[in-house]
Every structure is written in structure tokens, then in C-alpha cells.
Length: 155
Ligand code: NI
Picture 1 (cartoon, rainbow, N blue to C red):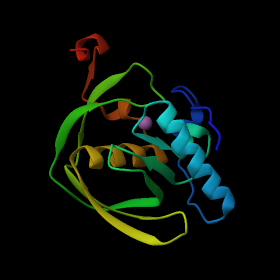
Picture 2 (picture 1 turned 180 degrees about the horizontal axis):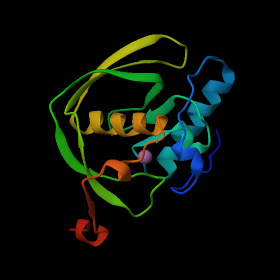
Picture 3 (picture 1 turned 60 degrees about the vertical axis):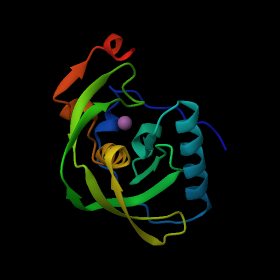
């Protein structure tokens, strides 16, 4: 495994729409392993393709319930709303309130290409929605309704 460089906010690559993953090969496994390692090392809970310079529909998420690898993910159902603070490894030292669905059903493929479906709620749903936005060139700072002073989060 290897660490990948995390792309920071003003890079145009974060603003592009990603293409689907088509090849479920060894290279994909290496990319997923590298993305997970990079996310854990940076103490993040999610990381999407564009954030490591890969314009493909791929993301990893771990909110403390184990690693979830999402390939070609799509939210097929969402319910309710939640509003809470988000950050992003590509936007260091920025936090803001974002409204997200409280529950989602996400369909995706795993690293073998198998089609899967998961029902997620609360923080897990938020993290997945955040990563899916990255795949469409969207950052949380675009949709935050209020930015937070990082000093206010310390206690
Ligand atoms: Ni992010």
C-alpha cells in the first residue's frame, strides 16, 4: 500500500465530474487500498477519487463501523433531514453546517464488481453523501449554510 497525495481545495480536479469505474482489476484493488491508507493516515472518515487525483466514481468511508468501499455509488432513496458540522480533507481547517438526508439507501459495486445495497442513517449517511458530492465536483463549502470558527469547536 502507498499513501497518495491529497488534492487541496483550489485544484480544478475537485470540480470535475467523475467517470464510472469499468475495470474491476488489480489496479482498482491497489487504488482502494491506497485510498483507505491515505484516509486513515489523515484521520479522515471518507475520501473520494478526485481527492487523490483520480476522476472516477470511487470512494472509501469509515465512520467507525468498518471500511466501506464504494464503486459507482448512487443514492436511490433518501428520507428526512439532518443538519450538522462537516469538514473535508481537501479543505483543511474549514468546518460548516450542511443539511443532508437523515437516511439513505445507496447502491454501489464492491471491488469485485458485485452489486450491493445498504441502508444508512445519521453520520454514516452524511459521510456517504459528502463523498458522493465529490464525484460530481461538489465540495461541502459550496452547500454549507453556515461556516464555523474552528476555535469554537474545541470544547
Ligand atoms: Ni470531502
